[in-house]
Amino acid sequence: MTSAVASHRRALGILFLAVLTNLIGFGIIIPLLPFYGQAMGASELQIGLLFASFSVAQLLSSPVWGTLSDRYGRKPFLLLGLLGAAAGFVIMALAPSLEWLFIARLVDGACGGMIATVRAYLSDVLEERERARGFGFIGAAFGIGFIAGPALGSLLVQWNLKAPAWAAAALSMLAAAVVLLWLPEPSQHRPLQRGILVRRFAELWGLPALRPLLLFDLLYWSCQAVYQTGFALFLHRRFGASEAQVGALLAVAGGIGVLTQLVLVGRVTRRWGETRTLVVGTLLAALGLGAAALVPTIPLFVLCLVPAAVGAGLASPALLSLLSRTTPQPLQGSLQGVTTSLESFARIVGPIWGNGLLQFGLSLPFLSAAAVLLGVSVAAGQYHERYALAPDATAQSPAERVG
Image 1 (cartoon, rainbow, N blue to C red):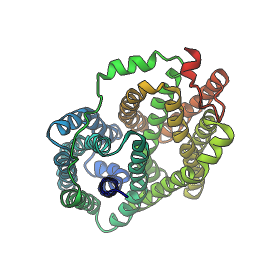
Image 2: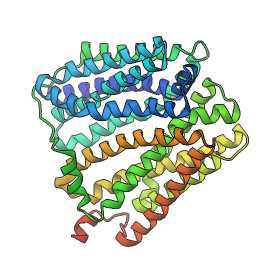
Image 3: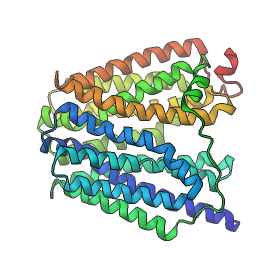
Image 4: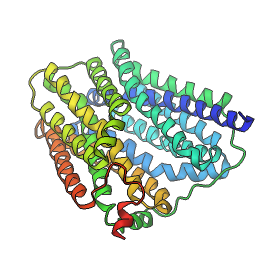
C-alpha cells in the first residue's frame, strides 16, 4: 500500500467519524424538536416551519460553503461547519422563546451546508473510480446517525428535555476536535462543477425517460419528510407516547430500513430489476403508512412500521439507481446537484404539508403521504411498462434508447 493510498484511507476514516458524530447529534434532535416547539407554544404549522427552516438554510448555504472552501481550503470550513452546528444546538438548549428556536434551526441548517465541503474533500483526495465508494462510505454515516441519534436522545430526554441538545452540541465539538487534530488539508483542490441549477435541471428535464424519475424523487422524499417530522406529534397525541418512546421507535424504524438495504435490496433488484423494486417498495411504504395512521394501539402501530420501513429501504436505493442509470454519463454531475436540491426542497415542502394538515385531523398527514406514495407506485409501474428496464440492462440507458 502506497503512502498516498494510506493517507487517503486515513482521511476517509476521519471524515466518516466526524460526519457520523455530527449526524448522531442531528438525529438526537429530530424526534424531540416538536416537544421543544410545544413547550414554547408553537402550533402544528409552526413546528413544520421549524423543520423546514433548517432545510431552507442548508439549501441556500451549500453552494456558498463549496465555493469558499475551493478558495480558502477544506479544513477551515469543515471546522466552521461543525462549530456552527454546536452553536446552533447550544442556542436551542438555552432558547427562551420560539423565535430563538427558529434562530437555532437556521444556524444549524446554514452550517449543514458543510456537507458540500465534505463531498469536495472526497473529490480532492479520491480518484474518479474511487469516489462512488467514498461517497457510499460517508452515506453510511447518515444511516447510522439516524439510528443511533434517536436511540440516544430517547435515553437522554428521561433526564431532562434540554439534555439532548447539550449532548448534540458536545458531539459536534468532538467532531470538530477530530477534524482539527487529525484531518490533513488536501494538497490540491479540484473545484466542483457547480453551474446554474436551472440550466442543469433543464438539461435533465429534456430527457423524456428521466422526467418521471425526477418527479418520483421529489414526491418520495416529500412523503418521507411528512413521516419523519410528523412522527413525534402523531405518537404523542394518538397514544400519549413519551419523548423517550418516540426516539426509541424512530430508531427501530431506521434500523429496519438499514437492514433492508444491507440484506434485501441487492437480492430483490437482481431478481426484479430497479423499476419493479421501486413499485413494490413504494406500495409497501404506502400500505404501512396508511395503516399506521388508523390503528388504535402502539403494538399495531409498531407492526405497521415494518412494511413502511422495509418499503422505504427498498424504494430509496432503487430510485437512486434508476436515476443514475437513466442519465447519460456526461450529465451525471448535473444529476447529483439537481437531485440533492430536489431532496432539500422536499424537506421544506414535507414538514409544512404534514404539520399543516395536523390541525385538520391527526391521521391526515400520514394518510395523504400514503396516497401520494400509492400514486408513485402506480406511476412507476406504468414507467416500467414503457421503458422496460431489465435487471441486467446496463449496456444502454432508457434515455439513450428514446434518443
